[in-house]
Image 1 (cartoon, rainbow, N blue to C red):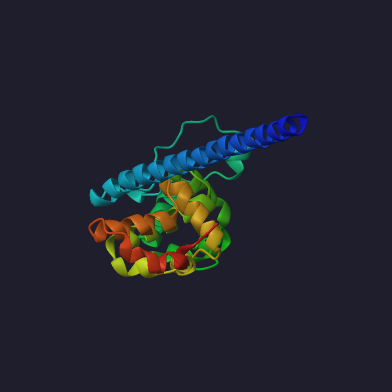
Image 2 (image 1 turned 45 degrees about the horizontal axis):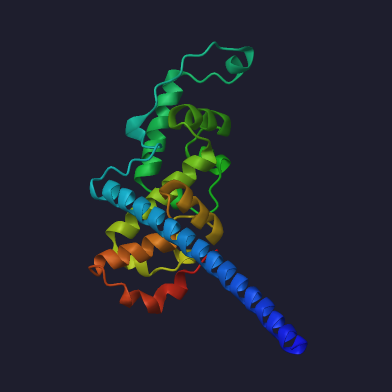
Amino acid sequence: MMEEKGKLQTANTWGGFLIAFLVITAGILSYILLKRHKKEKSSLDNYRVLQQKLRTHNYVSATDSNTVAPPIAQTETNEDKKTHITEAIKQDLLQKLKKFEDKKQFTQKGLTIQKLAVQLDTNSNYLSDVINEQKGMNFNRYLGDLRIRHITTLLFEKNMYLNYTIDSLAKECGIASRQNFSDLFHEINGIRPTDFIRKRKKEIDGGDSSSLGNISGLFSEN
């Protein structure tokens, strides 16, 4: 009797462990699935917002030369006087920046503020000041914003770009690093380029995602 009782207790103990293991496993799986569902829903919502902007030609960049921010009235300090830019110089630089944007010259690889200043026949301090004041961002952000919005528009309007790898898309808009491209794309658009491509293809195919399986590996990213 004692031996049978011991076996029964052992069985109950192992049974308890098994139940606890199953409960914990189910909880973990539920958490993972819920998190994945929320991530997918957020991605889909962001895609729809972006899609609407692109369809209505409302995908406006803060760098748009036609929506220049008004100068902010400030008390001029001694430091300001040292780098004071006349209105004529400012307007000249804005016109040059507009041509730079219209001609998509921002896709040049390895472009720096020093190189652009030479191309625009100015100095980097003047250029930096104008971009900061009129575009509301620093040069690196200004350049990245132009590049990402350019490639996003191409992805939406020209289907051939949907078959490009992430590396190729990055190079197409002048960004050297695949990861930097992906991170910047997500920061500006609220969605990863891989997710944008997948959803855009599904949209074009009328909701049929079966044709995407054989190419998903091309766009894998961190």
